[in-house]
Image (cartoon, rainbow, N blue to C red; front, side, top):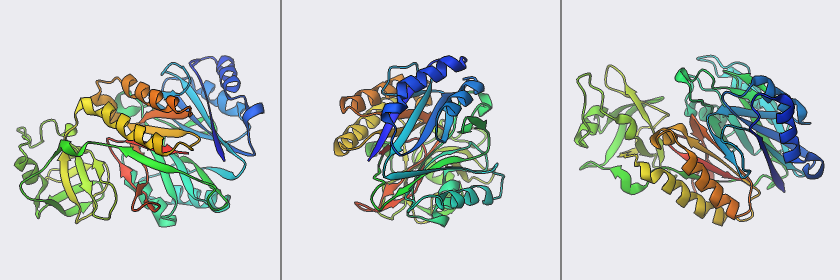
Length: 392
């Protein structure tokens, strides 16, 4: 059995008051089981000393991240610091953190993960908080985990904030805010002790734009889409009626993400288009392998909350025995909601609270969540423009 304990505080600059709120809310004396680890989710402008004091008040390791908005089942300000404790008698937790990740090097994260996996009996899952780095997409981390053990269930965010240039976006390891290190929790224990299920809210199929013929990726590279049907990406986008400006960029392209079917029996994934290279390749928020079938989705503001509600409602119903939920929603969804995530957060709170379960929700800069190849087999995958959900 795994329990999830949540507490939050809106005391962002008062160490003593914040620690008091958190410890009273968690009531560790009554609730703590044999093994524990914590997730600290902090509003970006919270005093770093407050976050550190909270971490130091906990008798176990913690990881976490900054965000510009989060929520739990508790009635707290969205500009808050929340602490989510995972505690269990049969699930084991090992907390690890990489050295500073540098461009072109896989060693820092891979070594830290290998060392931490060795501390847990039968490691089965990873909960991670990736730094926001210009040279590391969601699929960069997926690749590294899969190289070590593709059967590990990998659920992770990329950190975010709302400042220009994301100057406050940080990961957190035992209270220390960091710019380029990756903290994570490995879950293990006896076979079957770790029981996680996953769901992803993306774009409704009816919001996909289709051409006259199937669009198949004929050339791609990491985080780049180069050719579709053996022709430049631009040709396909123009065939759908999307317009280019005088510089060759497509007008409003951020509102038209790619829906990619990898043709491996898994759920389609979303890839945001960020820009175009001088030779016409699309720069995207992850990888799309050659042979994938794609369409272009249209982000409908009215659908963002609707898709979250529909997917989450069905998922909660199917996971009545879950001990809690973790949800991370892409900042792109927040931006398209007019920089107002209250409706999505309150929709989540209403659905999960009706089931009497604890939860953690936050906006993030990128999402990693397993998709299902069949009823029980999962494949790790990076996502964009999605709300990822884990049932604990």
